[in-house]
Length: 269
Image 1: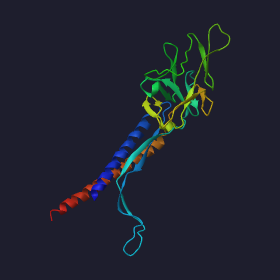
Image 2 (image 1 turned 60 degrees about the vertical axis):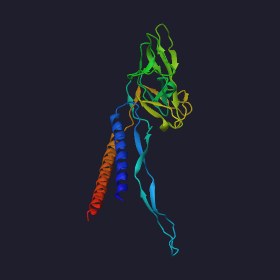
Image 3 (image 1 turned 30 degrees about the vertical axis):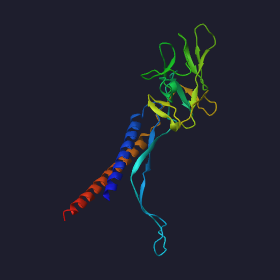
């Protein structure tokens, strides 16, 4: 009956609407430092079996194919793309890019993600206490905390995360801290919480924290920022495909409605 087509088309409209939301968010963050694009994965729903493949009729002949009618589609999940974004040179001492796998670890609310968030954005600044913090509306502190002494100059961050500064009255640079980065077995399983932050889930596994360049972790590049990995052209193509799929599902909905209307009119005869 056409009622099945109505429901199937409705699931298609819902799924394509979700895809449209994800694409719009990707395009909105095309210039967000360290942003990682997402894509929508779909899967079909259950099937009604009207005839079983391989069944044998009265003459002993075997049916080569069955009759299965699907009940639509649903969004299976949104998958993060962790390909490294473009390296944008800023020549700013506190802009740091992770060249390779890994995340910066920052302090967040204790009741979220066990108090630690993870980000690819390395746009840091100093707070009133001289600590390295993210340049966001919340000013999340880098973990482990690194404090720059008052009056220090020439902040240098090495590839392996050692932070040194020039302190007045000292000939040699003073080492003030070590930037550590975290990796995950399955970064696609991380949960997005806004502010360009992720928190671990059971799917991502626990973080492995260590020095940059060790155990498969990326190295740091001072004076660079990792740009968004959103490809606007790809997203626009996906936007057109999604729009066309939405239109096709709406036409299926309209066709099913017309069939049901015709069946309803037959009752008058």
